[in-house]
Image 1 (tube, rainbow, N blue to C red):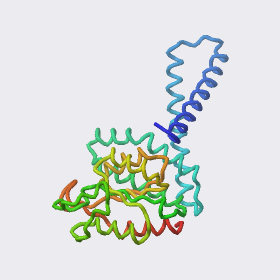
Image 2 (image 1 turned 135 degrees about the horizontal axis):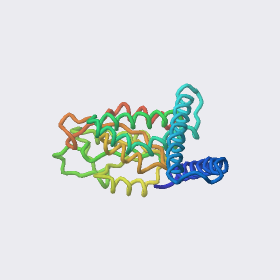
Image 3 (image 1 turned 180 degrees about the vertical axis):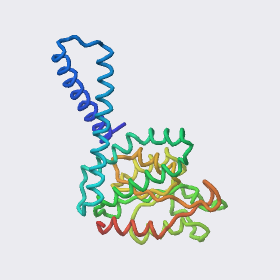
Length: 250
C-alpha cells in the first residue's frame, strides 16, 4: 500500500488505538483494576464495532454531501475513495459467499470511482492525458502489433485502434496499448501522465484503479461482442467526451 491509502490507514489505526486506550483506561479507573482480561477483550471488540459503525456513518454523510454539493471537495472524495478501496476485498468476499455476480460488484466500484472523478475534474494539458487501452481491442488478424508503438497502426478500420490514433492526432493526447498489468504500469511510469482514461474489462479496471491511486483514473468498460479478450470494442464517443472534459476542465 502506498501514498494516500497508507496515510488513511495510519490515521484510522492511530485514532482507533487512542480511542480504545482512553475507554479502557476509564473503565480500569472506575473498576479500580478489578476487571478480568476477557472483559477487556470483549470491550475492545465492542469498541471496534462502534468505531466501524461511526466510520460507516461518516462515509455515508460524506457521500451524501459530495452527491448533493455542487462544489468539489477533494478531501471528502479522497476519504470515500480510500474507504472504498479498504473494504472492497471484503465486499468481494461477501459477494462470493452469497454467490452474487462479481462483475456487478466491479461495475459498481467503477461507477463510484468515475462519479468521484467527475466531481473533482479539472483542466489538463493534452500531453498530461493518457488513454490506456487493452491489446484485445486490436483486430486479432492484424500482423502490425501496436503494443509498443500505436503509430504502427495501418488505419485499415477493422478495429478501433484507428479511432484512438485519430484522438492522438486531433487532441495531442498520449495513447498506449498494453498487453497486461505489468506493461500498463511501465507505460504509466514512462509517460508520467497526470490523468488516465483507462479502457478494459471490469476485473482489469478495478485492479488497475487500485494500483494507480496517486493518478486520477476514469474507467471505461469495453464491449465484448466476441467474448472476453478477443476483438473487443469500446464506446469511442464516451472517450472523446471525456477528453473534452479534461481539456476544458469539465
